[in-house]
Length: 259
Image (tube, rainbow, N blue to C red; front, side, top):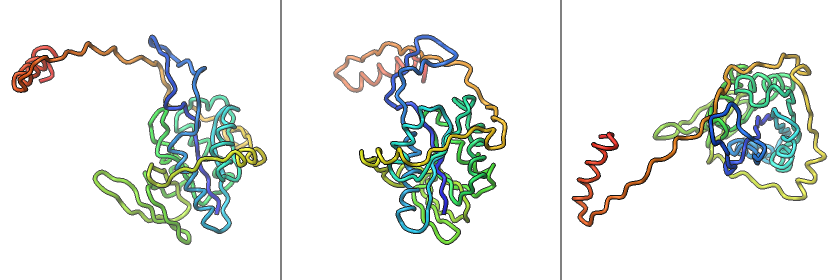
């Protein structure tokens, strides 16, 4: 079995964004970049399938500049992925999900995979579209928000989250799955494995190498704006709870005008 894990390098959730005024671009010079946390569940699930036995090869696929190599090495190859593919076209930096899906689908079509895993969304834009776009372009079955997975002979059974409950879905392979928190507990790489990961294959390709033109983004960000400043907090000073409630209702009605 060949498994592809589509991953993305994103700004760390603790990275501070400095934006004093509206701007067309963010200053990303001080950003710390990490593997998208939801993609870590996809990587872990692929490694668990590999460890369960059988001939399984796991490939991490991403798009980005040379800086993505360290993330692939530490968070993909060092925890068990066999190799990585990086699509290096500069035009794909900051591209939307349609462009990324088109480029990644070209890699997947070229190499042929039985199972494609990715996170439910990337924390930088929260769009959650990559998985379904990949499935559409690859003409594969698609199951989203997977929290449990069992593989059979040419098929799978997945448990996924729905509003107010869970849903059990059966699908045939090949398939694309998006992975959600709760599917597993991603492991941390050990120092010896990080050192060994440097010897694993890491292929760099361009869209031209894949036989396609660089896909254009259909969505572009025109402007980033800082949030509006918060208004002053007004405290109601009253020992009587009933009086405090009346005063709160009056302020919400007359000043805030929300009731």
